[in-house]
Length: 176
Image 1 (tube, rainbow, N blue to C red):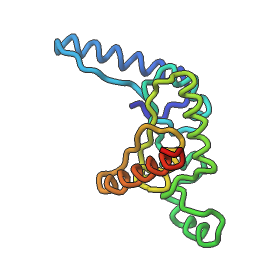
Image 2: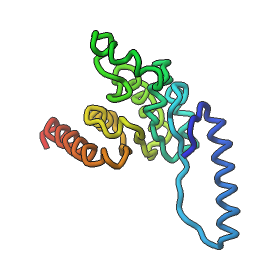
Image 3: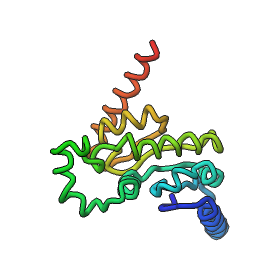
Image 4: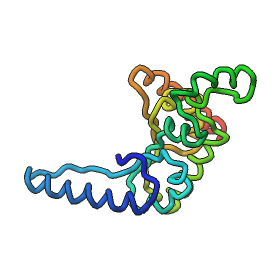
């Protein structure tokens, strides 16, 4: 997984480097293993140009912590000093580092999902970061068509339950 990609040519070059290195390692070890090469979508520009980036990716993992920082133009380290007041006074509904900002960062994800699948229909899509353990964020991920969420181990039970609820809710909505 190659982080912080901003352009397709960047991932194209790094993919070639990984593939060349893997060939050398496989030749020296006289063994091969299957692997996939993908990128973290953490930069708003990458989300907006996901159709080009998907040409060189087997998967996208949305790094929602960094995508939120860059999407809002905030440092997560500094935002803790004023975000609680923003939530309390109604400037924002939720801390965007705890629950995914569906109206902004979520739109970047939806754009990237549509563009990525347009170019590469088999691309695997998911998120990693604290949002992967937040039930409301998981419901959004399900609706957006992501294949997986990743989160810290202590949040896995909550994430699994939220994913099951999202799938059940979607099935009931479709009369299944």
